Length: 253
Length: 270
Image (cartoon, rainbow over all chains, first blue to last red; front, side, top):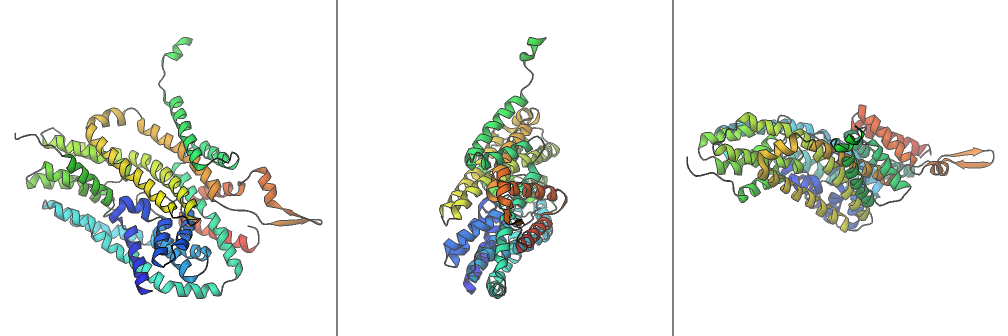
């Protein structure tokens, strides 16, 4: 168990590290992936994948900009999946652990970003000596080493000690709790969509939100079909709104 | 004047690789991706500037505040690489010109990039992947990773090389005057909104289980609501959540929803 918890902690560190931002942020931090890897380490990849996908769902619309991130979805996915598998309970227990774990981990992110200013100032010093190697090293390593303690260590501890705690807590819980978790799990994806609406929902494009909703609910179209129609509508919209006044108006002159 | 200094394709590839992996290597409040940008420029600087004084100036020039969306924003790196090349060959491009390009483009490009990548690609691909993964199908995560890699790696690579190839000319003709960025943001917004609307209906689940007894007949609310509009409750929930997020932090709103869900479930409302 020690080795497995260590491996899961190491994965969480690697996936969440900005070390490999190009692949990490776009793929590895997603609970679907973290759940699968956690499942493989714990010897039940199928459950890991399914629990990870369920946790991923509540973070579907989550966006982060300029370092403001409301939940650490990487930690939520890995810890939630590990607890769900180790406690032998369903995804409901995983969800109940994932959401607070994600919030807790995100709360340490600002500390990390504050401390990182120190490495940037060290990079200033190296730049002043024309030391390109020093500048590169400052960008690559210190923040990642810090992340071992911010992400890797807490995940290791949560997996190593957490499962037992959760198991005894679950045993004391009434059946109704599971139903409540299912309800909350169904509601939480609304947060991500709300965040996307807040970021992109300008008045001029808002009607298209309802268009997409109606296409799915009443016309029962596939997501890909709706996205493709969206591209066509966007092209039409662009053509009809951005055209400069041409000679067509002169016919009335 | 010695022979003309020229960046090789290898220099540009190395620079792009550095950006792809280390754009957020040392993400800090003080300068966000500033160090990541400087790191990206190192292969460029090493090729163009041979004496130490020039190197120092170039490194310091790029160690300033910078933040954008990595894939779409990498057009800036290509653009700056071409400016540095012209400068190294004697063109009169000062620090202010280079930083002017960076600061004026990084914001609008982050807007377009986030709308396309975080608001559209990631959401659609994840929705497809999750629906497969939820059935225990390992193709879900594989397809998700493949699609994300495709748009992130190749999208970013194309933007980077495009920026280098067209240099400042592109900045003046295509980006600045024509309102292209606004049109792109608007178009991405339309597609994004439609997808988000559809996904709200698909993935947000909330139903009344509440029953009333009128006389001797039990009246359930949900079937009546379904006749008015299917998925009405999820729609209302998303809109209310959005309004709450305008004023409160996501953490608080998560708390509100959890409380509503738990209490509602215990009271047999939802």
